[in-house]
Image (cartoon, rainbow, N blue to C red; front, side, top):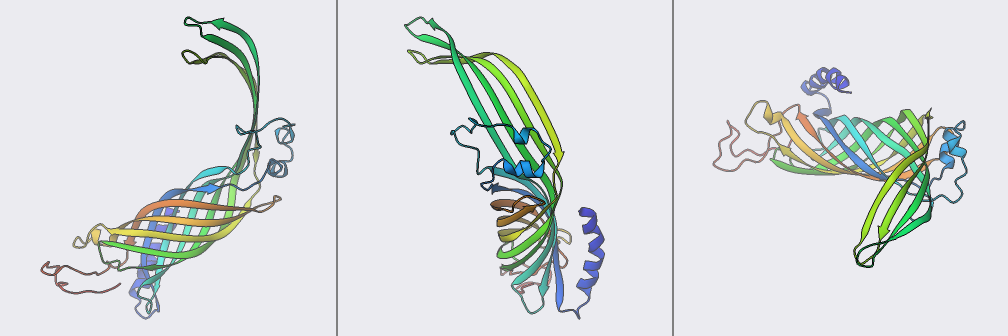
Length: 311
């Protein structure tokens, strides 16, 4: 990804120097961050369609559920994201920019878990102070299904901003994206284990466990189908300039951005899923030409005193 940025820089500088063009390259940005997405209401049939040769995906899960007693629908996923972008400006539009970016992410298509617990009392013990210690044999079994993929998306965004020449500036906008998911993996697991659990409810509360035993552990891994995804984003952020006098730092801006998004995810052979996400991103923006801003009166700035220009 960053090799692509280095490849683009010479052409960007050349375009910047061509004053006859109606579109001007303003800046190049790199960023990283992550988002939290809310999973849909898919069930285990998602994994049955994506990995039809999996025995665990077709196992009998009657009587299994999550901690609330229901099947584990509606997961929340944390995803990592990084990217680069180029900001362009129509010469007649002084307060808005068009951003074109490439974004790489590693995100979760689905992560489901089904569990069951069976218990039986082994014995009870009288404790000093009239307390009763109950020792139970707990047998746990569970199925887990995880589908993760890499994704490369093209981001197209239009933003409106305040004066970038100031130390602090803000921006907001909207956009669309589309891309492909690749290098996906599906990991299915079945585990059976048991422990002895000791509890007492009074007069002093006691809880501890002993004799953990792993009875069964089965793992399956499959190559996941490819994914096509698209959607819309709403970016809102702020910029902080790192310098205005220094020849190098005057080009640099630190930015932080919140991005809400609506995702449409269509894996091959699987029904489309709709997700929403909220993300935070931080990065560095390099302005091709340092933006000029408002300067305080009485503060000389190498011939720019009392000047005010919007980039």
